[in-house]
Length: 532
Ligand SMILES: Cc1cc2nc3c(=O)[nH]c(=O)nc-3n(C[C@H](O)[C@H](O)[C@H](O)COP(=O)(O)O)c2cc1C
Image 1 (tube, rainbow, N blue to C red):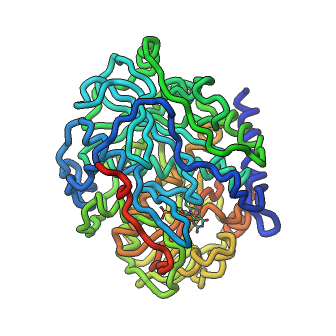
Image 2: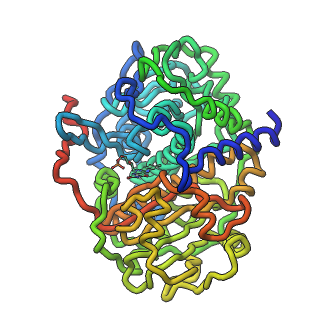
């Protein structure tokens, strides 16, 4: 497919999956419980390697993660890998209500449907783990050995794929977007989990999707049969340090002598709806191999967090607020720290993993921030984004620097207003956008991204998901709570700002405030069902 055809396909998908006041993107319109997908992928017949539940052995504070060198580097062992997986993709709790029970995980997911699957490529030198390719099965905290082979490399790679059907079952055509958000969240979760171990994550952005599919065995027709297929997403180097770039060809050659095992499970016995447009946009956004990206990020100071909670505890306590109390406010200093943590910084998680320049800025609906008048604000996550947004946003806004806010946060008030109603309306009439302390939309440099390649479409959502993961953890650290918002009205947001073209598109919303707990739900520990 030519670059122009792929771009046209992406633009068409994006346009048709917009929600509007008068029309929602096509979806099933009801919950077909009979075909609800199994939330856990399993490979029957693959040897299982039980992982220890070892996260509690790591005492780094959340604040330590933002002081380079503060957390001692842990060695690569089965135990430290187990902690990495537990704190990124592992279960965080079970919830039960009226006879139903469902698992929550450290990584959030739209509708709790969890399309993201995690894979590990273990090289030589990981204590107590043989080299090979493994799938992480989070329900039982085990690795399933997919391929046993010797590699010409030492170290650890972790990567993700998506099972689009899991989201499409509920959300129809817009599901592809949500799968991408979830990948961004999972990448963020991986970075924070790695930081607890004194490790770093590096996105291997030069790899092509076909490389990832081959390495994870996603292209092995007979291992899937009638089971739902997985789309390759990303591959990361993970560990205490990186020696050389990992060469995809050398690893793929290592597969030649590999012995594969395991048959993927069928998640839904039948699919009552088909969403061919998802297959089309998936195809159009397949990434070829590319030269490594290199982001030049402007150096900025860093506001400290004062959170003294253990990072492993904060990560597992992360939840989405189902409702907000409509009264809790946060101090302006807390907002400055939250915004500060979303800035790209080459040495701090999670953006140390992100090789691209920032292409997403924030449109804030400020409701309850002490020291900041309610209204509409924009936070530009980089100098070039500020120039672009000033040109794209219609002229009549104030652009007044937010009072007492550090200048490098580039936070500007567009208008003083009670923005609660607007925030709620624009977020599909969800109260959570107006009853919080503040909510926001994420404005992505859409044309700029797509001009690089249609595959950048997915990465724009990943960047939003990464920012979302920062916001979730920072909300917990500030003693409040966040919730991702995938349901919002696209073009009405653009209209509010006067966008006349697609230079910027709002790709994700988020909200943070004082949560209301639902006392009817019972909370159970994540791994009480395991005997180890
Ligand atoms: C991409 C994304 C979109 C979401 N959209 C919404 C939304 O529109 N409304 C809402 O109430 N919750 C939304 N959520 C929150 C999820 O429902 C929540 O993450 C999921 O139920 C799992 O719960 P947890 O976050 O507490 O682990 C979203 C979460 C993500 C990651």
